Image (cartoon, rainbow, N blue to C red; front, side, top):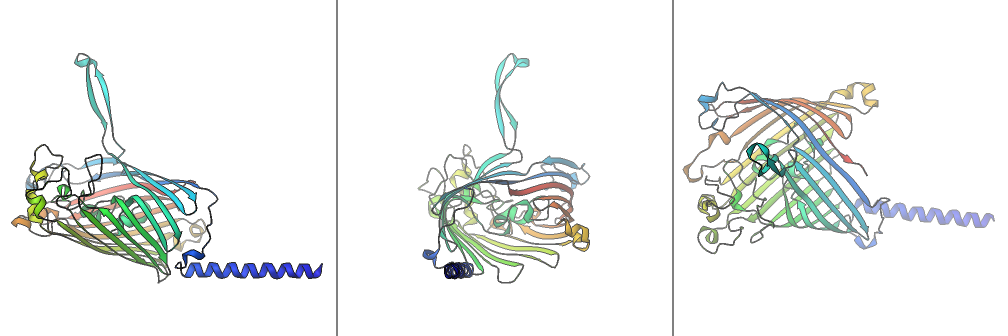
Amino acid sequence: MKKMMMACAVCVMVTATQSATAQTAEEQSAVECSSQKENKPKKALSIGGYGEIAFSRNFYSDHVSRYSQPEQHKNDPSHGRFDVPHAVIYLGYDFGKGWTFGTEIEFEHGGSGSAYEKEDEEGGEWEQETEKGGEVELEQFWIQKSWCKAANLRLGHIVVPVGLNNAHHEPTNFFTVYRPEGENTIMPSTWHQTGASFWGKAGSFRYEVQFLAGLNADHFTNTGWINKGNSTPLEFEVANKYGAAMRIDNYSVSGLRIGLSGYYGHSIGNSYPNNANGVDATYKGKVAIGAIDFTYKGHNWLVRGQADYGYLSDAEQLKYVYNRLNSKSPYKHSAYVSKNAYAVGIEAGYDLFSQIPAMRRMQRQLYLFGRYEQYNPYASKTGGTTYDYTEVKRMAVGVNYYPVKQIVVKAEYSHRFLKSIYNNEPALNVGIAYEGWFL
């Protein structure tokens, strides 16, 4: 009996040693994909989401001509608004054998709605009324095959992780009440398109490359650069042109993540119908973006920063693209679009509750933060035209209070500094947000 027990003990020790060795090797590198065994999670279905509620009081004019006639709107009254910037539902399912599914449904600014109503005061006429503004978008919808940590293939509608904001767009990943303005102005946010993504983790690196439908130059604007370039008014995403995106993050230093990301693709002619003549056929509209960003968390500090630079070839020709001239098209952007755009920003917060033992024990946090950013979607004088009000410097100071890890209460005072001929734009913003998994 003793011998049998000793044999069993030796067996258990050998098995445990082998298991520990395999686990260590997996943590160090995920290159040997074939050696890993599938570990199915206890719950195949996952449900989560995030959302934001905000109140703003803007101490500047909201008149449409506040930039074209700034002297007439210097003393205009302030204006306020309540808003639900984003309300998002995550749904995921693990089918087993490395196959998973994920989707993200987003309601922006409360969604949208319309209905037919019978107007009694107008003789019983039927009318279609717009009940609510906003947008409803399918931000993600993909099927993924995972072989190991180092090799995952995702197909469908996916997030394009170019820049800090797109890669980490949940409200617990930035201090301000609204998403950081710079990247949110010059690039789609959240940037999502249909395509294929190969991603993985190996050692201290996470990497991702994507093949996507191209951006649509018909949507580019003077005040938003390529911001709306991923959107479509059609029932499908046009793919006459293509683009590629990449991202790599390094976690070698404890508490620090540094990321590099970029995008390249053609945009002119990526519209419907595919015009065989004129500017659409002659020019490419090459879009190239490079970005660097970081997040540091340590010693009770949380610091984030990013810098993005973008280039658009044939920018002067966009004014003459057919769909932008056609009065019946859904685009009709007649202004010049800039050849270049940029956005830089940094924010830093210190956890005041880290100095209070009772708060530390309850795992509550109170960050006092400051943010500075500068951006310009019209950084070059394309066609000799200038829009000086697009050059913005913005500062914000405020607090973020975390009563629990998944919920944050935000308050900030911000100030946009414009060129001297325009009126500066101070504002007070308050909000509450959450992000987490329910199942």
